[in-house]
Length: 234
Picture (cartoon, rainbow, N blue to C red):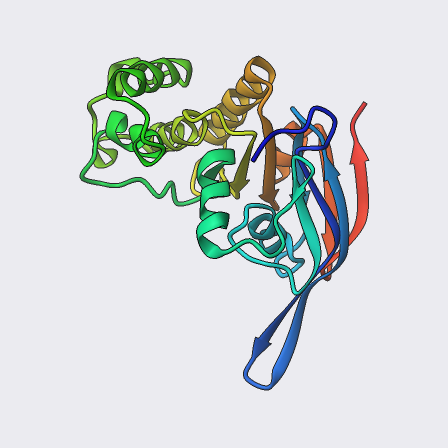
C-alpha cells in the first residue's frame, strides 16, 4: 500500500458487525466512525462485550465488517482477498497480544526476526534491525534467551520488539497488560509510550485496564457496540 501524505493512518466509515450464531444474529458493532491520525497513542475501552476487540480485529484486517468500510492510509481494504489482507497485515501492522504469542523453541532474537523473514529481508539487514530494536526495548543481554527462560515482562518486551521491528504504520495491542503485575505492566506501558514518541508509531490499545487508560492520550469509549465517548486528554 502506498502511503498518503494527508490521510489518517486508519479510518472506519459506518462499520457494523453482526455475528450469526446458529439462527441468532448477534450484533457486535453498530455504525462505528473513527479516525486515527499518525503517532496517536489511543485506547479503545469499554466493558466486556462492548465490541472493543472486534473493532481492533477489523482495524487490523483480521476480521471484516458486515457493513461499512475501513481505510488504511486512505485506501479501502473492502474487497481485498485473504491473501491481500494478509499482505497488508504483514507490511503495515504490528500486533501485541496479552498472551505474548511467542514461539517457545525460538530465542528472543529469532522471535523478533520472524516478521522480517516473512518480508524476505536480507540476512544482514535482519541482523541489524533485530539487534537495534532489542536494545531499544532493554533486552540487550537476553537476545539468546528462549521465552520459558524469561519473565512475563521480558516476554512482552520481546513481543513489543517483534511488533516494531518491521517499522509498521501502526501497532495494535489487545489487553497487553492483562497477564502482567501492575509494576511490570506500568514498565511495558512506559516503554511503548517512549517508542511512540521516539519513532512516531501509532499505537491503538483495546483494554479495560485503568492503567492503560491513564497512559493513553485518547480514549474511545464503546458501549453495546457503539462509540459513546471520544476524548483526547489535554
